[in-house]
Length: 139
Image (tube, rainbow, N blue to C red):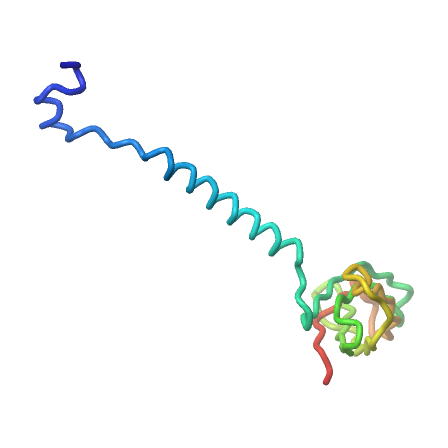
């Protein structure tokens, strides 16, 4: 009888854990790999049809009354979207605003769904940043 199988140790600490059978270990690895592959496909496909994404790309403050906002919109080719652009001052107050319409465009691949746009805005006071606040699909 080995040291790990003595009755006193078994009574004190309980029976040693059983090993997982080899075929269950294999199925666990296969399941993990399948779940990992599914997650990779999910994140690779990324944007499903009908979704709208937007982000700031940059801005330029030209003067006390004029600024330019650069932004990116990703949408379906035949969809029309509108985006609200803001120019902000140093206290985050809106000093300029504009709604820009992004109409349908040509393309055939997922990468061509992105559109880089630039819009000039008039401002009441000198701004310090320009942002795309929100975008929405228009029927």
